[in-house]
Amino acid sequence: MINFKHIDASSTDHALSVLSQYGEGARVLAGGQDLLFRIKKYIVKPECVVNLKTIPGLNYIRLTPEENLRIGALTTLSKIAESAELQQRYSVLAQAAGVVASPQIRNMGTLGGNICQDVWCWYLQDGFSCWKSGGKFCDLAGGDSRYYGSIMGGHLCLSNHPSDTAVALAALDARIHVASPRGERVAPISNFLPGHTWIDGRLQSHTLQFDEIVTEIEAPFRPTHSTYLKFALRKSWDFAIASVAVSAVIEDGIWDEVRIVLGGIATFPYRSLEAESLLRKKKISDALAGAAAEAALQPAKPLKMNGYKVDLSKTLLRRALLSLAE
Ligand SMILES: Cc1cc2nc3c(=O)[nH]c(=O)nc-3n(C[C@H](O)[C@H](O)[C@H](O)COP(=O)(O)OP(=O)(O)OC[C@H]3O[C@@H](n4cnc5c(N)ncnc54)[C@H](O)[C@@H]3O)c2cc1C
Image (tube, rainbow, N blue to C red; front, side):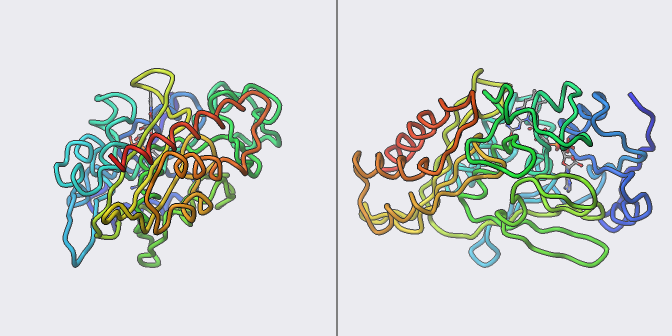
């Protein structure tokens, strides 16, 4: 492992000033489940690591009609999965947090870190030259795309976004609060995670600049039915091969404000407006759930080895929709 300077931030302002001072050479550390792995693998070689866990007041879940749902960026995935309030009103998020990796990783990993994590493509991890490591090629395009390759196209890097909670948050229409020396900005999650984008010379799946940190995740307060379904090769310790997050307001069996987001199949949480529009103001039925699943996957253009994800995603979506009707 390389040597780097480690600084415990005492406040958000302190963290931001260190990031400004070190520029490209600094990285932010939350639970460390992603970042430390990458440092050990020499994928990331920071000069300085800024520890956010020492900042008081960024670990909370607050829920009020006036202020919406607000979750501090340093809140652990375990706390989110175990929250009775979230299980009841935002079950999609509690369920997604509860199926991330293993209990040990959920005890350390934070919501902020989970949505900011980088891709886990095996070509990147095993030292192949690719867009993310300074090369000019994505091996997933013609290589082994079974687990990590997008079926919805992509720009440069074709590796899927790996976060379970980001898919759930997209179904909840969440907004990401970001602090920087220029003040605070708030981004809808679709703008925050647009797919791989060059920012400050790095090909990232989020739009954070080097001197920005996520402080809070917010979602609207409204009565919703919601659920998250995930298919992974192993029951724990594994990323989604495919996943589905659905949220809707269902009154007297009629669906409204439907949001359908697919995970494990695109370089960002993939929202299907086509499937949503089929369900709006309707009662769910087996046939309608099937039609929505067909519509959601209609744009798919699988790579050489991941065509099976199309049928897998359709099945997950159909099951998720029908489960909310029960
Ligand atoms: C074996 C294994 C299995 C896994 N399985 C899954 C899975 O099934 N589903 C899933 O979703 N994930 C999975 N993961 C990924 C894991 O959940 C994430 O690595 C973890 O949630 C990241 O959170 P963290 O707090 O540890 O982040 P860190 O490792 O501390 O940070 C991750 C990244 O986010 C940045 N970052 C962290 N917090 C902030 C912030 N507040 N503002 C700005 N940037 C920030 C860091 O600089 C870093 O780039 C797995 C990881 C492992 C090792």
